[in-house]
Image 1 (cartoon, rainbow, N blue to C red):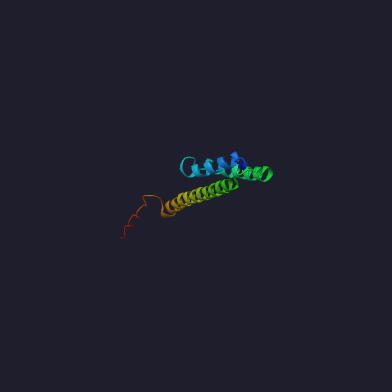
Image 2 (image 1 turned 120 degrees about the horizontal axis):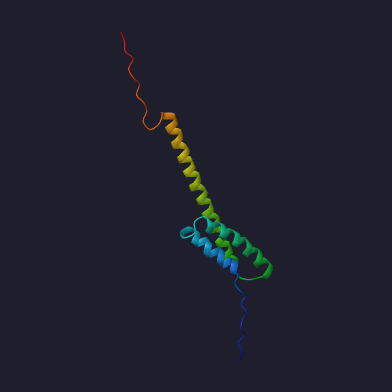
Length: 108
């Protein structure tokens, strides 16, 4: 009795890179990891559609992790800018860190 071996499709390398950098962006590669995950994820999806390789799920997960990371980075940067400008507005509006006390006007 002869067993038939099923030919497995090769795994797309860009999909693996997308997943790895998508995970790494949260721990080791802030910002740049998210960008790499998104770029390689889109390249992987395109290659997988064209060649029929495996790895579509890995590419999708890498894309999701990359886009989520970039969104969080954008929100944190926005929060930092708001805090800085809010602090500056408070300082300017209140007369600085050490507001001057009015001197009493002598009467009489």
